Amino acid sequence: MSNGFNFRQKPTGVFKWFLKTPGLLFRAKLGFLFGDRFLMITHKGRKSGNTFHTPLEVVVHAADTSEYIVCSGTGPNADWYRNITAEPVASIQVKNRVWAPSQRFLESTEAADRFADYEQRHPKAAAKLLDSMGQSYDGTDSDRVRMMNNIPMIAFSESERDA
Image (tube, rainbow, N blue to C red; front, top):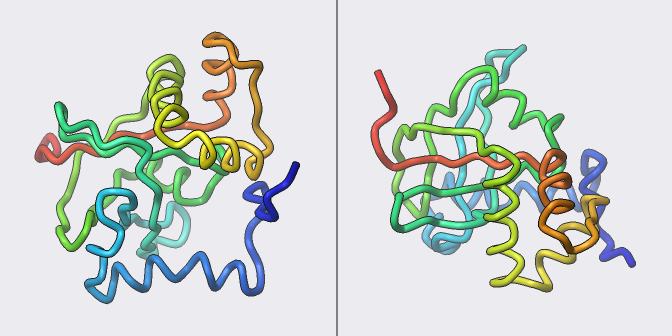
């Protein structure tokens, strides 16, 4: 069953324009409209050196660690993901607050646990997301860990990055 979106290919046409809307709202100081559900990363292109702004859905905001965890829904080959593996993000914006975070890449086991939490909180959104990414698993914890090798997760911390 398809929900009409295919995140396995780069978007085109109206869908591409639609996906740019959150970034425009963040840059217009309207990030508060998204609450804690979305954030925007500012990162440098690994080849071009250009600055890019990429809005991402927050999988979980871990209040106990002040981490915002996002995933690369299109996998490890997403441009923004490849950029931040080459050089850490310059800043993130949540609501209208901007700071330079530390970042860490989650191991598959931790990512699977975080995704399980997301599935519990947002079962319909998780199902649609997996469908649009062409991902699935058999419902077991071990297969969820296997799947997360294709859906990398990154945690951005509000604490100052190490110097």
